[in-house]
Image (cartoon, rainbow, N blue to C red; front, side, top):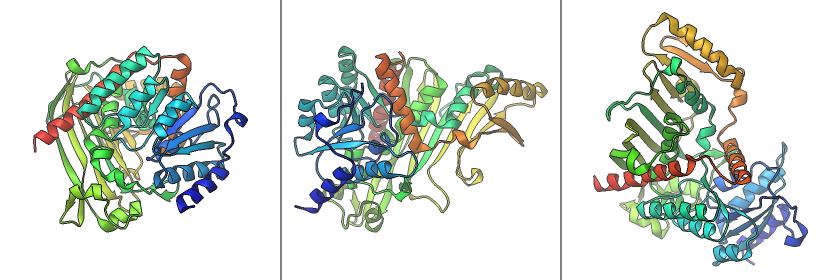
Length: 456
């Protein structure tokens, strides 16, 4: 027996693996996890859900991706505070996906891993009668986008739901930026902007070397291969494009063929040495499939950075993502967001000046003496929905003071997205704008990739 098999056997014991007939709980939802190559797959299970069976069937090839996933679930089960009670039943083999289709051991497929085959897995899962909750991105190129459109048609025909995991909608500063932007007395109306001075800007900085659940994250080697993970312009920017749509046009349907026009887009690489690569993958050399991206056989060029300038419903927007290797001491992933209104700008800043916590600022465009009175009147109404939020004055306007209880953190947001999806599954539908806006989102990212590649 090899080490992989020994490890798998031990983890299955610790995760309480049982025969199928012994573990039926008659819960309406049963998760199936497919090839969990990304740690986001485990974060979906960081919490338990009342209507979800504790038994989760996992279908995946044997290897380190699976081992790490099971180890994370085991850690959730064994933690001191609010431990979970998941029981993982695992099937490994080259036919893992076909086996999942045949066995039909659940009704909701969780997809978070290698993106090269993700769109195909989505289509086939829907054809087989499963709901699908998929990590972003659901499409990493134009061919995938066309297949994704077909997948949504299949879902509609089969009365199934397909949904992607948009965690950033649950970040409190983003929520409040959206709330204030819908207040005409505070924000006014959204400006149209220009290419050089967009009305909406969303920029984020990420890091390959990071901590998750208290430990240094081990990333799969394929995460650095853009043909498998996708370039940055179609990966993390998915979140940013989603937030532009969700905040600037709340609950409005976006028709990608009429409402979205890409002005320009660009992409550029982040270099990574073999030593850096080894620190986050535990590999001693670059895999063969990464050699196409090597410079002088020593440095890996990863096209994980991208910028998109586009118009959506006549409004100029800009999204950009940057990947650095490691955050500065005391730092972490950062986010900057600007919404320009006719009365005020709403700005989220996250950096050393905010203690690397996102902070929301309201900056009025003029010195109208009545503005402050109006602002606090509107705040009182918002405090009913979000008790405890207050405002503190600064030279440019006000900072929104947010109680720490609202700052649940990125990992907790996966549970919040999953709860929302389960609510949709229970109801049998989603808001009318969700599906067309998911299609518009992936059109924007994949079309931008085509433009960025062709412009170099």
